Image (cartoon, rainbow, N blue to C red; front, side, top):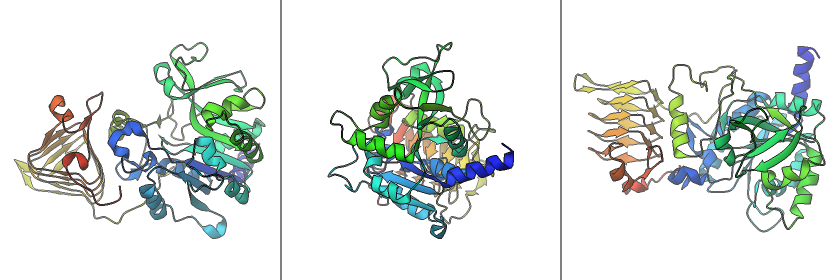
Length: 422
């Protein structure tokens, strides 16, 4: 197949595909960061939210029919999508459609990932796709789904699962699979206590990325069968995939990073430590995740903000940021920021020192503060003379301290009530 024919072939496949992003989870391991928002709505990377990454992957892959399935505390997620993803052209059949739990098939919330899709089966049928792409809404990565669709069709598969190699000691948190020489999945265990390593590699396992492609008619058939089962937990990983691999052709698709990283960049920022680390990775000179990539941009809601400002140049009062990312609307006034990520509208008042911090939007840091290895939630007003990150025992009395010593601070922990949607 020539390159031009291949491009047209993939374009036809993406046009005939409907993507569903599962965005209803709380993400409880992120502690108080998800007290008021679902995990996919958590800010990331200075100006984005986590869900912007799978949404951008869809748009950049040519998939422009997308449904977002929401449930837990979804207001900020819904508002973000309305504000930032309203550029689709409805007259061309493009959309990002919000699908909150609405008891379409039964009285109750989404019971599992498969049930979330099943409860919207009438909407799926109305859109009449040839293929359905199901995505997790809470991972950070860049991927061209067109390649996976083309492989799904070439393999004549009933279902294709995106997979990635993960360290064996981390594989307990994933669905772990075994494959034959043709990448057909012959065994699948969701979050096993003792993961099976890849043959010949005792240190890694082959894990599901939560990326699934189904032939649409086949998906409907399996969802109905699962919904009729009283023994099922109605989850793709626990129930549907294990029930398919013996009888149907379910194949694994190795993750390909559009940026050419080997191994590909993929992060589950599901803990405070992982969230803090993934944000600070972006500061590097050549980070694995390139946010300055014109070929595969990450789209989001763009607030109209003035440029970041740095004021005062006195020896004891110099406004500066070193090895940091500073977003629009920020004012650093006579303080030093080192190796930190400042989201939009952060104000740092004079004589303060901030290092190794992730500061979410609308935070105000008072004078004479010393802050190290802290994640500040949106809207915190840090009082003058505050010190955090230097005495773990003292910090733990007021804030959440992670296993790796990252301190999470929210407005409620500071005795404040943040009045805006998070």
